[in-house]
Image (tube, rainbow, N blue to C red; front, side, top):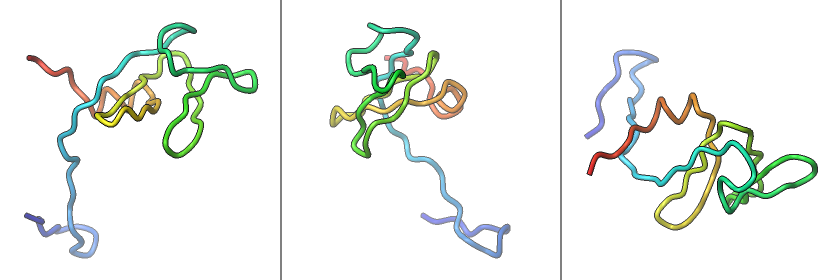
Length: 84
């Protein structure tokens, strides 16, 4: 149910939906099989095209098998380990 905001002119507030991803932290070649060398750097194919990958990034994979890189700071602010 939408919650009316008391800020920003009464617009709607949103929260991130709960989602699950598999993630691997990438530091060097061989850490993830989808990271490739492109034009002198490292990159991974995403549904939107190639995205660069730097050491320390997380490589996320969703339930459909799509992968994308995410900076460590953003990753740790959005995701937490799943305890099974």
